[in-house]
Image (tube, rainbow, N blue to C red; front, side):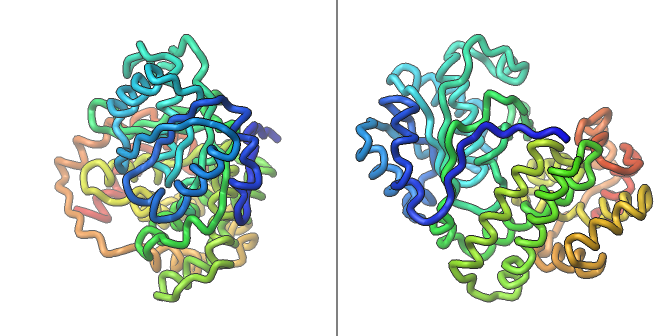
Length: 365
């Protein structure tokens, strides 16, 4: 077994106020990284500002994080943060804001760094400390060493490095209560994607599988309720948020499989939200893994307490109708990006570029 996760994680109601001293330990000046709406609307920004004030930490805010944040913006804000004396970064939001905060921490410590140096991990100095506050139940970025950004070629590109773990992360599920139904479903089905892909990774072990199974079991009930149009209770929101953390813990060890990387293509070219873009390929992945190792797939269904039809039904219930049309030429043009791709190789099945071609053609041509 193999597991490493150095982040100090606090969850529960008012956890930020209760553990404000953990922020003071990171420095005396903080750059808050968030978007223009969710941090305020959810109450998370107010809770953070109050905690920072209580422990004597000064702060300034960049609230310009966009969905699928471009690396250029992270470079620019990192240099600004360095010039204004930021000693640590605090990200508030969903995956985009948290991933941007991780990248910005690198550029604060290395303001001369360019895009190539960032992706090559050619960092002369370690990133400044990172604190994260989640406002969605989805990516689990609070507890991962991953940052996913849009590179200069307009492609989503992930990096993995132990230096990107947050020193401290806070998960108060009250901050997810204001998420609209569509965001709840898109983020929630990303939890299922993380957990399922982790389970069927070649790197999976006893610990990661335990996290993955628990994540699916906890996410299923709230997601089915949300998909049916029901209003989620505070308990449902807490359960779904905890599932997102478990999904993040699972992919700490394993990474993701081909649905995530192929899903990037849908996000880049068709504007499909990240969680939805990954989840649409989960049924196809299940066909591949069942053919490769039927007993292993059967164990997964048994442990999550759902048969194949129920599991696929959970996925499809969360997905909107996607009006996507591709030509054979578009598919062929995209295929080289998956040659020797780590996520494709990571899948516990005989998946090749030709497999992905057949999946895309079957679904969208």
